[in-house]
Length: 103
Image 1: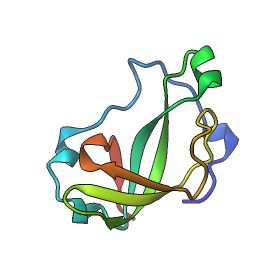
Image 2: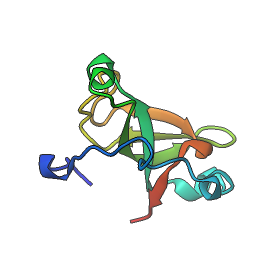
Image 3: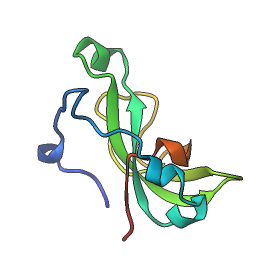
């Protein structure tokens, strides 16, 4: 996907934000390898001061890691999350996936 243009980054209220989808939790982890998935990351203190609890970003899934655990590379430049950066490895479970895009 590459870097997201700043014009595509927006703020959504917590009630309108993406949520983990049970349909993804029920799918086998292997089916996500090679796909992009959207996950929520907790924001840093600056984000919290502005009222943002979560930053929703895309991850390119690269492999499974036992059971329903996946590993991927962060495909966005975080704005409010200082704990991760573009291309960092991210470990997560299928029950945290908010959206998925197979390319």
